[in-house]
Image (tube, rainbow, N blue to C red):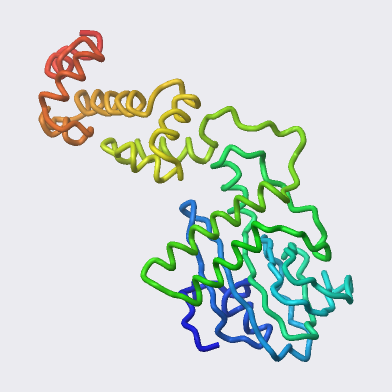
Length: 311
């Protein structure tokens, strides 16, 4: 189409985004962007446009734990199969949003020129977004793929993604990352099927966030609050409140307790100098370590080493 596509992950194969999606519709290099999010998760957007519809049905992508949210920008006639069973021989309406469950291995035969913006949303990422934003636990999108939704938010987001592809600049990748975040939150809020017995979270960390924060503190006793918050996908203020809600201690109190435990073990089980132990346990200086240690144990590090825990 004469426009430069943003980068996509070339290590993925058989996924319904980027070149893998385009090739099945006769478009080997569609405009596409992949966003890495929530540490291990990802989202993707692909714009598909052609005046020459394919003459054959698309091949199957195989089973994929993901959804594809499609904003249709042109009226098209098509046939749809799910798990090799014919489901639809009708039309998709311009401006409407459709949701396809890729676990059902959809295939289509498009009979008209087409223009769509397709958002690829893995289920693992949807679940992580729901956890991070204190939303009910994600289960599924129960709407059938044949039902088009009049969603002005999705129309605007699809238009913004298309415009960002067209007018590329230095921050276009960051802009599309933000659009993908907004898509994820919008579809979770508007279309998500939820477990009626699952309450909203009470404000603490999600289990994966609490586990990751504690792991990081143990690995790096001098890790900063901003690093912990970033790893959990939260603001520093939100992380601090949520951590205390989950553990009963502020992040600093938890970190200090872990430092003290490590220092006590090193004082009794090694011959390292007190200055070296201070640095290894995340303290800025020996004097800072000595003051904190005495406040927490009632003894200086030297006395603790000489007399033992009961001294």
